[in-house]
Amino acid sequence: MKKDYSEYSLDEIEKYRLRRQGNQHVRFDYFSNSVYFNSESKSISITVDSFNEFIIIKEDLDEFDKIEAQHRTVHEDVLSPEEEAEREEFRINDLEKNKENFEKLCLKYDIDRSSFNERAEEFYDDYPDQKKAPLNNVLSGARISLSYGEGILDFVYSDFKTAFKEAIAFPLTIQELGKKLKEEQPEKYMGQHESEPDKIYNRTYELVTEYLRYTSTVVHTEEIIYKSLYTAICPPVFSYDRDTVDGLKWYYNYLITLQKEYSALIEFCFDKEFFPDVLGHMHPSERYNLYRDLHDQPAFSRRNETMFYSTRMMSGDKMPYGLRKDELLPRLTKAVKLTEQHREFAEHYKVEIKKLEAKLTFLRFLHVSYDFGSVAEILELELTKMLEQNVHFRKCKRCKKYFIMKGNYDTNYCDRIAQGETRNCQDIAAQENYKRKIADNAAIPIYSKYYKRYAARVRVNQIKESDFKQWKYKAMTKRDECSDGKITTDEYIQWMEECFPNRTVAK
Image (cartoon, rainbow, N blue to C red; front, top):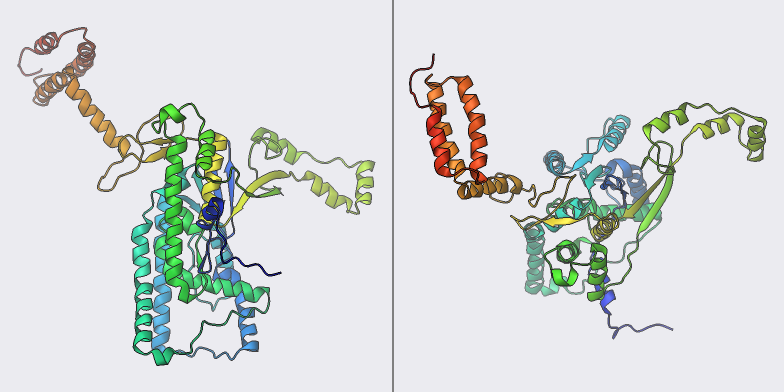
């Protein structure tokens, strides 16, 4: 029996999930990325999906073209010299944009794209007549390293509003123009219907169809996705070109919803000044659970975990994840002594004895990572891993933004450079604290006054350099005594005056 959902009412959990997923206009989980969390170093290692690039998908594109030729009337593009020149100009410009975007990202993050670059070089060696194609995403195939919390803060403080306004301006103009033409010439558009659904012939055809939608989407979203790391590695895909405006709006609302949610979560879970009488006794993980409870959100979250064994990569220094360096070499160099039992084993499992010997020599390390495709997934993964490993945010007392504590250096100020400033909050705060210290400490300006006076006399040879150095040390000691109240300012000034009473030229 068919079901009628016309009067279906969503509950709060369904509404929560709906705001964090795509719809008929846009998809948010197109890329298939993986992330590894190192609990010892509190670091994150992300491997970005590399499939969605021309050099990887070329064979599928060729098969797609063959299928198209079989089922449709396809005419090969014949371009004029002017059109060829224009296409080449676009290609060169896009390559330059690739370079600029990648360099900007490298200034902010630790990015290694060497493996993908080697693969690209091999491709163009195999296809020497193929011109270098611009990347759809400059982070394709990259490995990115960052500390716990950095990805969340980068996303929360990114300016998507400005980028969205720039991105939607042209599609919105085209949409308005189309509406105007329909109003002015209704007879011309009468009887037109929505386009037919895409005909899918096999798995490859479906993959390429989605890929082509993605490449079309990149044109409209590039300004937005490179505003943060997580939007860059989790780009959206619009269903059709006609969905560009609706897709951009839904995508922007999706990002803003996540920004607001994680800004609120950081404050609720980690800020010691946020309702301290109510939340001060609770661990961040308890506060997180309470937040979800108060917002009618599920008390659980799901992760897509992948476990595999590697003979080359360690993810720790204890088995099953790895070994210490002093343990590794003996294991690698220790030869396997074959016995009769080894031969029985090889015969039982139908493996050649030499192959068994090699297999027993290899070390096998367990590696656990998580798969994700959307911004919402990686944000939740990172936050919950922070809660697991007891990593905290702290609010900067100057700019009021949150930051991650690094190492054992305890500070109340972040290392960001605020808009309009040339130095970070730590440096500015240090200078401001120094000025306050001077203002509150009468001994410091006294020291400064006599330091300048006697340094000038050194330059004209009225005081010997060696005598000045000895005086400087004693003057600083007296300054500290004055600051601590052991001597008065009058006594400090009198001592300063008596240090170099004569003004004769130093011999």
